[in-house]
Length: 199
Image (cartoon, rainbow, N blue to C red; front, side):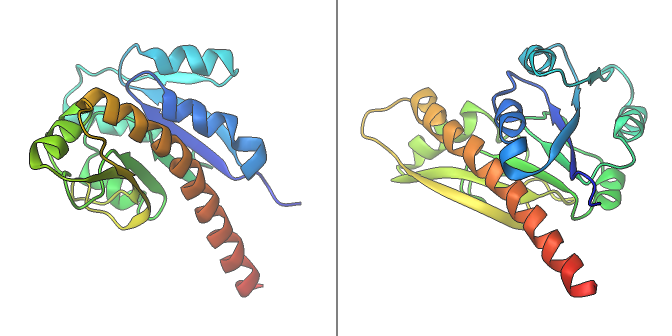
């Protein structure tokens, strides 16, 4: 019998992306096994509501110890690690260990508006300051670069005249919820196809 495709989610904020992943698990065919956070945050409340265990990492640890603790917290049978609004920049060692099995969301059409310091409302402020007519979001594999891993899915969003960065960001966040789930579904299908070819 085929075992469940197991997902560990890492978050630092309100947990909107985490909840989208949790609510789609039966429909798509995976199971969220654990939530890892680096601070007390809204994602914990959502994990409790859905009966999903969580672990809070100690942000005061030196980076090496922090990421060692994080890596040890991820269940060994995890098939995919999902960074869903997780603020720390993952260490190179973890990126290498989880190559092809760790994904991230970003609120822009990468490679535009990615990299160090580009997160949250700052991204949409940059979009509006540039006069771009299109914004959007990306789900990508995590590698040692910041926001530079292979792109899995993107969704463009029209910039509306006169809207604020917060309004634009809110619309993009809803698309981010959706394409994050779609990206997980794509990864599962790709794995299933690979397994069939190997049999």
